[in-house]
Length: 127
Image (cartoon, rainbow, N blue to C red):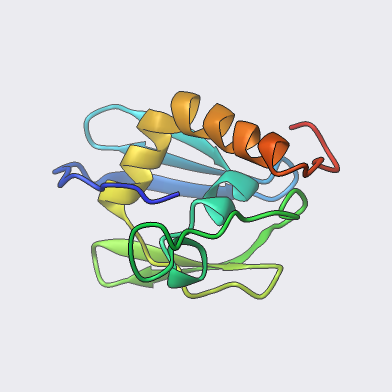
């Protein structure tokens, strides 16, 4: 699922990884705080593995229900690169993308679940 990431001029003030609940909590300098499940971040990776190299090349990510973030590497002062427990580590999540994923989670997550259902995939847990 390709995202059109707008330029957002907010910066994070705090990032926390909650390993038990598998949530990345990120607060921004405009007062917004988002709780982003690891699975959600993994399936919306900005990596070519998921989005391909052009429109129509997106690959539905499945089997990510139990993924964790094992490391979170800073990329300059504009992004982070999570290392996921399934070996995926090529996605760079800019502050703008994380903000967009937080802001649009109420729309993006149900749409993803519908795509899974349409593909005949049944999640192993109903988070």
